Image (tube, rainbow, N blue to C red; front, side):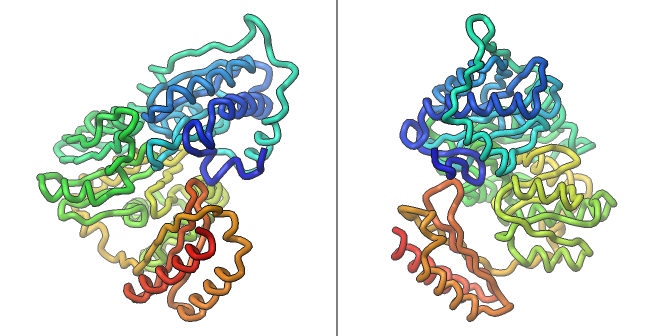
Length: 449
């Protein structure tokens, strides 16, 4: 099995093509064995399982359940729930040794994937994933037989507990605020609106009728312009857009301003600092976050610490740095004081809470935040791994970096979840950033497509 099975966020591929039920069964069996060795001891072992709304979710969830129960571990099935609901259930159960989510997040409906959470409800490290991968071809000889296999329990109580904690997170009522919520026809289509309503908000839900085919289809956090159009056509105080498994969020103001993860981090960081609730006055972001966030938070006496891309890297960096807030431009927001994982619904509730509590507009909350022009181009490629050894691309990157000097930056990286190379250029001039990004993208396309 190739060492590249795991990407930046679990295992992902097209259903019944690069990702098959057989692979998912073997992977889930290995995961359950590893979970029990790492977190289980000799007592009862439970693996929490959830999924999003894709048509292939039934097929892969069945494979996960078969793999886990074949090891003697029980499954606590939550059904269709946001990914962070699984992390929450693991973190709050004395019997849970880990969690498995069947989801491909923001990817189209044809994809599916597996995300893993360890015994504390946190995503696994690269070393952990390597150990699990090493078990894939080793069918354990000590598997239970007959009546010693595991069974499935249904976690209605755990789902209710997650919803309760979400609705209580703001710490005060959101009475009267009008929310337009794009559920992406995904895993948050029930609990997203329910959490806001339980907190007191008036909610109008969009894209809340999943059919197995329409997850992320022309909606969700990767298509914020759709929510923006609906906001401008209606009368709402804030628009919220989730991704397919509800761990990413973007927002839209009543005037139509789109707020990405950088905007949300700025609002939350300023508010927490003003209330002396930001440990060390420190925030964690990734290397692709807009550097305007660094400069703007510096004026607020908030330090920004950078890490590699992905919410897992953000989480581990937050732990090392003693930070309670972190996130990335795509909308992964982590709030350590409230959740062990990134949670789009939680982040959206907390931003809404700032609006209600301060009685300030989104524009006022973003005063002092100036973004640097940033252009991102996704280049479809045949072999994304070939990027690392291509000297022509490397030379062109160096040339662009030389032209930008200290006033800009370039980032070219292979996606960990899709067959694309992401080309990003950031500099003070929008036209210059666009031209350089397109030039680099053309070189990547010529070399790797």
